[in-house]
Length: 242
Image (cartoon, rainbow, N blue to C red; front, side, top):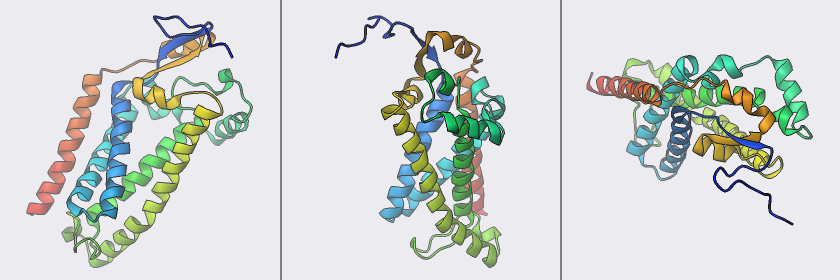
């Protein structure tokens, strides 16, 4: 089979254009969260409690950042740009099996993917927060930094949430990975690469919608992320010293 003709300088094939899709803060958040979740899982298996706690604090800071960036960040990173009603989600889902690139391409998260972002944020956020209050004897009798401020009943509930909710996190992460691989293998759309480089190739007739994206300064995003990290670090430090 003949290789598609490309422009050596741009890597574009006839009828396609490279467009900027994701800003640096969104990409940094995404891969940092992946690393933190993997680290959390691995340190749990290896009973490395200190690193497990740090991974949890990192996840909490990242979730806090993404919530803020969802209101003040680049236009396609804002919740208002990708959260839609159930009718649009179902309509999109019905088009996935045989839909064309034009029907399935969005200048940001698609209707189904947008809600998956929210589900993941909620689940990993619950996991991180529950860990702050959890008190358990399976991790070298580790107590979360805020357990001293909670009753024994609250600590017991948080333990249950921490051990139960992680299964929902794994399911959601699995669905997210499956969707990305489905688009890559079946639909021939490299969404993973776009989250790495921030750039995606789309049909030329769709490029205009991507040009309408309003990108915020990456410096602003990094500053907000740093502040979120300081807030979480401050809460943990004060709680431990109190």
